[in-house]
Length: 145
Length: 122
Image (cartoon, rainbow over all chains, first blue to last red; front, side, top):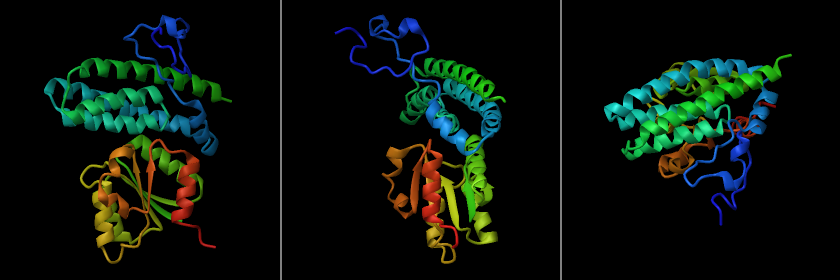
């Protein structure tokens, strides 16, 4: 059976990786940036909330990433877990699936007191945050009257 | 309905506040459990307290224990919100909450829970 066979694909933003045959063994499948259906429930309920939430995230997310970046070389597992946990709560407001997962990996590392691989996990989280900013910009543009 | 909301995460607190206000409730906010406790001591019990489990100084579960031990506040409905659904249930204190909501929640879940725990006066 080829790598990736049997997996149900819901979303992939790179067509070259959309085929199971094209996925190398060590490639982590990309989660959707945002579960748009669930975010839409919030936007339908509280119109106009997205700008306000995005503004709050633009302040808080870099702060939490900076705390994580400082915690890793200091061996501060508790600090890493706390910052990752807080970021999970924030990105969860956007149903930002990939960011939730990426921050969850760091939180688990912190809680387990095992920081091996945490630098790469943080780089992955930063990549996912970049994807989230782009997707939020796109959605805000789409919603603009 | 008077609702006291508490979370140290500014994004989540902003979402909670905007959503609950949009439904016409009167909202007070706090950013940690000690602040909630101070508000409760000063203003008395609201119709509902919605608190995050993980907060600095005094977390949601510790706050819940204090509320239940206080004669004037013990009957106050408390809704606990957490992103750690699997671990919160391992702490027996969580059973003192009137409800537990897991992040990320949907507006429908939140509204149903609030209406159940603090029904609007007829």
